[in-house]
Length: 325
Length: 253
Image 1 (cartoon, rainbow over the protein chains, first blue to last red):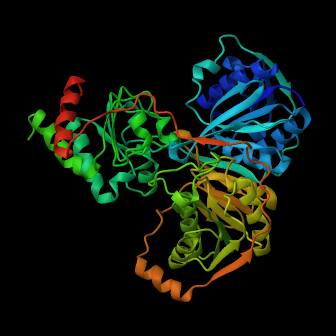
Image 2 (image 1 turned 135 degrees about the vertical axis):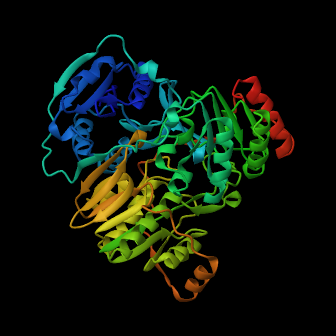
Image 3 (image 1 turned 120 degrees about the vertical axis):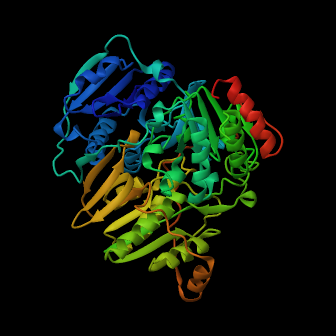
């Protein structure tokens, strides 16, 4: 057992994902308390240069053709070995489309405790603590990161990516991968995001709709408002999964991060997966019937009314203000 | 093909979440449970596969309040077997325990494919799917939004920014469903009621709950509300008038 904190670096198509820097920042807090080092684990193929701005004491670079694309199987087999051999005090993963496929498997396989949805970590009198955000952002859970080795799935929000970026390249140590033949999970191809539609990440006014829109027919009401405001309609996960808006309009964890001048959140509860993508908006205005909706913690202005009542009234008044009606 | 869909119930977030006196869990009496919405997508995906000619769909759930409705609704959509696992679920259960219970039972069904929700909003110890995969020695892929079955599974896995990877997964496998290929179908209550008269929920005893692997000494609390929004009072018309003023002040209009 040692006191080091390992971070599994997430990267996709030769880009380090922001969550990796968030994890490095968290790892630094933990390593400061344990007296150990921050070790970044970079599993990849021809991507050693990605290590250059990782704020780690050392980067372990495991090079293998099997890491050219993400395979849960390849990651599980490799990380299993590192955990068994090194027994770090903690290993951090992104609570993402990648880390989520790996950490829970390792927890079960190696009988190591796992916490997910972890937003922040800290040390309290030598005890390592986590705080997770669950139930759509309506509940926090705090507890201990159990020894000897705790696995942690991290979400953004508690640390800024800049805190995990280094000005100087860290020491890079190359390490061997285990045998990775007969992988059960392999990538065959990629489907690029649809082009031709608007890019919500570049729009200055977004009328964003959530579960409160209730059905597809009501989407038109939001379209009319967006048109009057010179913006476009975006949406949260439930609206996209229902097929009421194109996937290109998804704002959130698996969609786009946005930074408009106005983000008008209509019937959007403000679940963490959505909130992480709208923090750079200049102004958020939230309309929701639920007074406890987490979106009100982020918004500058809010109103506790039904979005479906507001939409026609607001569209009309905006049109009047612009002399359109 | 034998498809199994393990589901779980989660707190309905429309209700206020009340923390009990212990501080470690939600007050059961104040809690309304509903089907995890990603599990609803897993059920839909399983039934879409069945309709394309792939075998039988069994839905498996812990025997807790509200689960009968979820199971009968699944039957009304086309699920073949409805199974409840009875046990001491009263004190709440973490995903490590749930995955062990599911694995212990589901192995007796010898499935070729297990579809389950990629996550649930109350997951604090990772998702059920990858844990289940480990217990059963199967491959796992999560964040799946489309499945084609041949001798292997071809799945569409979502990555950030709208990128999708087409992946090949050896069977048997566990897939964590993010979204079914089509939105979960609507079934009228009358159809669910009709199904309740004919469909049977089978019950089997769950193995003893073994909770190791989840975080310990957990304390729940409501998030601190830092700078809350300035709330605009009045009806829709009043709010709309005020919003137009704000838009003008901010140069949006």
